[in-house]
Length: 197
Image (cartoon, rainbow, N blue to C red; front, side, top):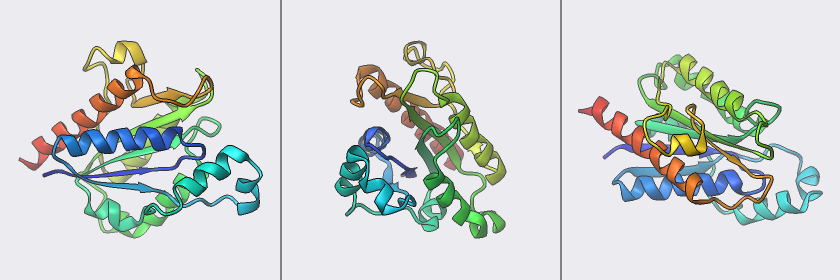
């Protein structure tokens, strides 16, 4: 049984919905899953000043947060983050910055990694955000598993680097989003399973 960590940050709920879909599909495929949000690092007064942000923070307040141990435990990991100026959020980066001791011990190497993201606009930095996560995985010594064009869904969602969701027209996942997420996690588990064999 592959152990999969899904580690993500979500401000308004779209990236959270993507993470949930990945987790559900992975569990249906027989994986053991740890779904973990990273801690909110923005000042509470800032979060509370934006209705959607405050509502989402309240809705996930009782859910477990990511710890370095979750990545140590995992055979594979999928990180998710909204794009911020073409890069990951500071919240996800803060989590990544806690991984130094594991990195020094070589405990982040030889795992399978993939990524997903969301942005408000169509060309809002999704690909650079995904590639930023890939750069991090390279420093880990990880095995980066992008979806490429290994399934026909990739010609609909158009992203060979990971999965990206445009949220400007509404944050609900559509059939294309769900199919792309299902393909990504299926591919990650397939590659991780081959490495474990």
